[in-house]
Image (cartoon, rainbow, N blue to C red; front, side, top):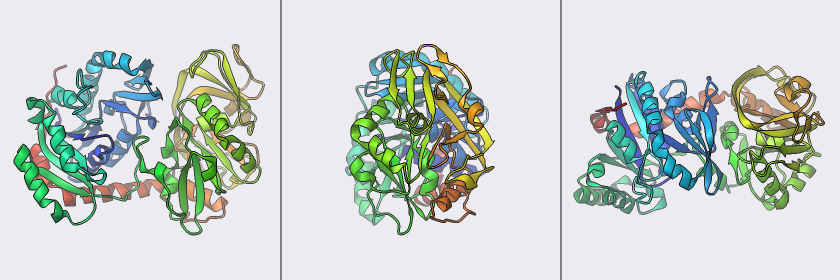
Length: 504
């Protein structure tokens, strides 16, 4: 069985995901096979493994830091919110259904065997497993039947490092209060505190750290500075949505529409890595401005988000914009660009419902109950248009969607799809009107090599065509690891590692 350590936080967004990723990188650099694990993840950013199984993107990023392939056993339970009170429940990469929060709370204990089997499978290949908690272990209203914080730590007998976010203020109250709300046996699992996102003179914390140690008997294992690095964010807590800074001079202005149920916004992180691009997430017609390109991202509920787009006035603005500049839809955004969307089974709402699309691409979409999940390795064969220069460029990505899109007129409500699929009809994974409008089901379409830089060149905002997003990410992972190594007592962290114990 592998060695194990667990990272828990005083709240969501405290920095657990980044700390897990950085530790995985450090352990890899030190010669160990490290792996991330999160028993239950709630996020709309997901990934498809080579086996066609779905998992959270945060664990994919952490696996990249560890230098190993993503495996669904790193994230056996994924919850994808479908509303304010319910989620799609995915277990071992497969959808088992939609549940309300109350239904899932009553059901989740039944998933303990799945969690244990996934952990055991991962422990067979890893020397060290770094486990990530969720939210806070002191959410006392949710502690019953916990499977992701102290409940998970108990399952495998894991020591815990507790992370507090000083950037939000009150970090000593966060750490002390969280610790004091735990049961004695839970409190004993905490082997160290980590103060995260610190800005300024670290010596100013000395008296506070000393008092915290006196009151709890727990060592502060590190003070991590605020890091301005560019790695995949876990979910909608991302700071990217709050971008209000001035655009970089002469840079491409990239607007991503932020609908209420936006998913897989990580598709556009590759542009954020370029010196000559600024990415904005826009949820108001007043903030749209006149960007160089508009992206419509994925959505967990395409019909509902299309209605929001229409009611907000953004649809009309985008249609006017598409007459002169490029609009590119990915997955749900691609479906919105078509002529109509039908939902005969009610997978996204009321059975038999339909909605008019934006009528910018000559496709119709029928929402289906069974999810398409597959990886994609192919070459682009763009039709004529602004991005024709990308013809025959290799891409790597994945598809994850609940609908099938076909040539308009080849789908009828209640009767299913009649005729050719989009791939057969257009002979490509990227569809275009031949002018300014593009769409694709492929997530990660722009990630490989220098595709994002080529996009900027087509927009008249040249960037280095030697740029590689894969190499850029590796450099960011090394910066993350170096920063953590410099500011944490890694000898103490190694001393905290324990043999995992699990009863199957």
